[in-house]
Amino acid sequence: MSSFGSPRDSERGEPDSSLLDSGIDLADLEVAPTRHFSRWVWSFAALVLVAMGANLLITNEQFQWDVVAEYLFSPVILRGVRLTLVLTVASMAIGISLGIVLAVMRTSNASLLRAVSSAYLWFFRGTPLLVQLIFWFNLGALLPELSLGIPFGPSFMSWETNSVISPLMAALLGLGLNEAAYMAEVVRAGLLSVDEGQVEAAQALGMKPTLTLRRIVMPQAMRVIIPPTGSRTIQMLKTSSLVSVLALPELLHSAQVVYSRTFQTIPLLVVASIWYLFFTTVLSAIQRRIEAHYARGSSRHVVDTTPRWKRSLGRFSILKPSSSNQAEVDDD
Image (cartoon, rainbow, N blue to C red):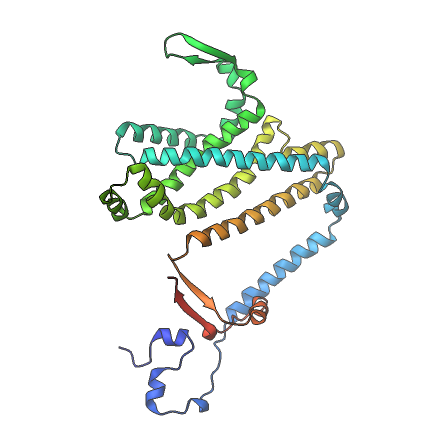
């Protein structure tokens, strides 16, 4: 064992045990903070980049901030924002619901179910989303009618494809079915993260497989599922801009309609970017709250006892605050 004391003592700001045993008066020792010159260099470089960006935003008149302010809450842009949110929520609902089913099929003991799930993932992850959107939009060229009946037998009812597959329906099918392939892998990773002993204990108590999945496995798997699901939701918010090729008036398409008439391309793209950034920030905050809820009792946290005003000043300081006021605690 080293005579210089435990690293844990130094991290908590406690005196070295070897100094206490030597009889040296700690009051006579001069404590000098470690100098981090590279931290100063990188901080200065970051400050220069931030200043350059701010200068570009303020001095470049091509941004036309007056035009941005004019169209930021215009009715045509707000209609596009509303449709973007509808597409995001509906597509994620389809993707998560179908993804859970595909993940359960993928982890099933039935070889046929595993094969069907694997084939679904192979196709929808192997073809570009833009191609899938265009395919669903032009499904009428392949199938003029959609019928319901017995395979290789009579059909009981049929519908004209173009009347069923509207641009909105094509967008939901393309976004939702594609997202289900990725959510299936996210959910499967969460299911595999749960210890098998949990399932065995549930079976020993006589719980049915569906009840075990709902009450035992899924609550524990959520800790692994939530972070990538939040990222997929944010990605879906931005990916919904691809449906502009279907002439759906979502946010990007609405901005394109305006700048094709006014020729103010940059300001309208800035308007769309501001709305995307706003909703991304909101979704990120929601994701952090949900993660914190499901992470309770499963991870170690560092509780900072430094007063709030000192922590606020520390955010703007180049040097990190001392860790002497931090204590590690375990959640019960």
